[in-house]
Image 1 (cartoon, rainbow, N blue to C red):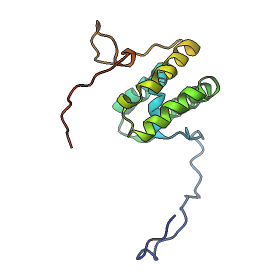
Image 2: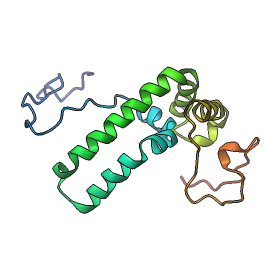
Image 3: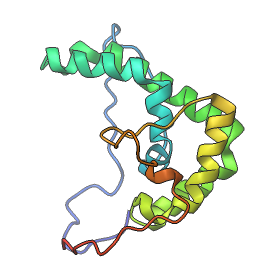
Image 4: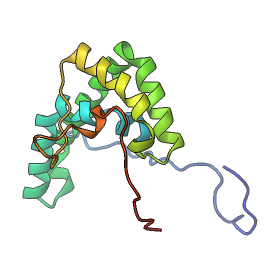
Amino acid sequence: MSYRPGYDHLPRDNWVDPTPPPAHIQDVPNVGATSAILTSAAFALGAHCGEYNEDFMLCKRDSANPAHCLKEGARVTRCSIDLLTQLRANCLKELSSHWNCLELNNHEFQYCRKQERPLNQCIFSKFGYTKTIPGAAKNATPVHELKKPYFGNTPNTF
């Protein structure tokens, strides 16, 4: 943590709550992945953990109490850890290339299509998943399969 003048009254180390969680709550490790890695593996996570994600979202919709859905959330976390472990074992080079590109390009997929193709091929061949984009036209070529994608003169929204 860097020093900031005027904040001497605040502690410099991170505070961790020493209180253990209640006994009925499962201890599940964190996924331990950055947003770029999760974004890179998003479609595979949807295919691999879709049922668990759907159960979790239905539980969240039915109850406003966060403690009510801890069991479903733990399942999603374990499934995500399982998939990322498998991706690391089978497609590490392709995954690293793609998430590094996303990290350097503000998580914009359009700038990382070149790195995305080998990752998709690895995931398609090793895991048998297919990539479907919600809301895409049925007869059109998916954007991730275009050889020379053209995005046109998109208006600057900044």
